[in-house]
Length: 169
Image (cartoon, rainbow, N blue to C red):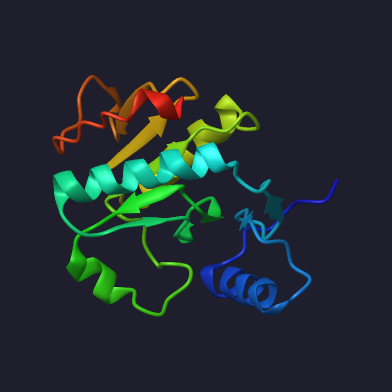
């Protein structure tokens, strides 16, 4: 039985850069901590509308700036949350970097039909261990759950209240 080797950040960065430079590479992907390619289907229009509404809501409540589909290093490889938020000073620290060398303060996953519970649990843990102060999961029906290092939270410790338009769901 062959043992998989966890790649260091430099090796993951090289693999990421190779994929980014290859015109034959898929549009949406992540890398596991072993450098394995994880393909994601193109998001639906509805998924993208929800992601944009989340980003706008975060900016309205926390200030600039939110981003959509930002690649970040985690202990589970290079992952791409649907939406992230962090203060402007942190954005200046990562200008020109892809993936970001740290996990932003807030990471949001907007669930798609292909997401498994295990995948979302793994990503939530990776974002929190990487420095996220809060992870938010938006369900298919528009339900919003907040998570911190202690687990699921009844309310956001950052004061975030995502009131997403019901016509998005």
